[in-house]
Length: 208
Image (cartoon, rainbow, N blue to C red; front, side, top):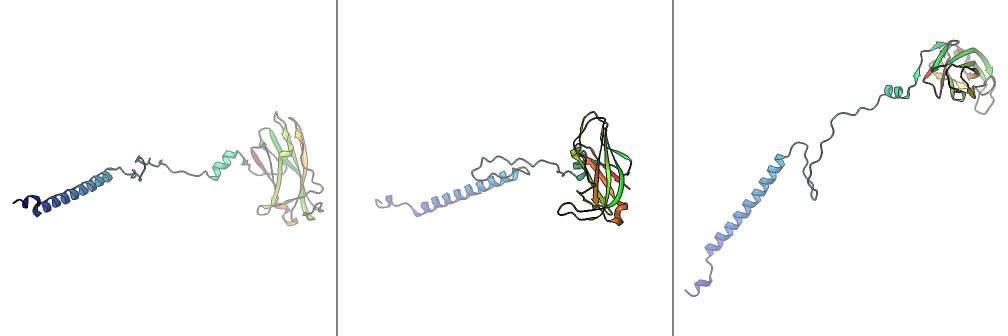
């Protein structure tokens, strides 16, 4: 009997071990159940917190669809309008109070004056600017171009009779400048002249 008091019964050891095992299993299942409940309780769009983060939800993306501005919107913003073509000899207003007219249209042959130019058939005309506004007009900002056929750009000529507008045009005054462009003789009848300015609100178009 004295020897048996220091020996733990085998059945008791097995019972304690089984009890600890069951307790650990229940704890693990309880943790998994809690985690699953938390995941299920999240509202749509709420992301789970990453390890080490405070765990605050990610804000939802703003609603609505972005639409890039169209070409029409950009043109309206620039405030520049291409006017309906008018016959050569008729006036057109490119900005309030400022009218331009193309006169003296003719065909001719020009001689190259600088490297890169070519000699041959061309057209020439006069651009007249009438300043009916109350402010001076910067004639150096007047832009004159020409095209022919299916909108083919005509090459400007620097030799005579080219003498473009320059300087400042005071209110109530008129100024003229001469322009020449290389155009094939057979296309002279389809020439269109475009006139605008750096301060203009419109592009004037003249045709034969």
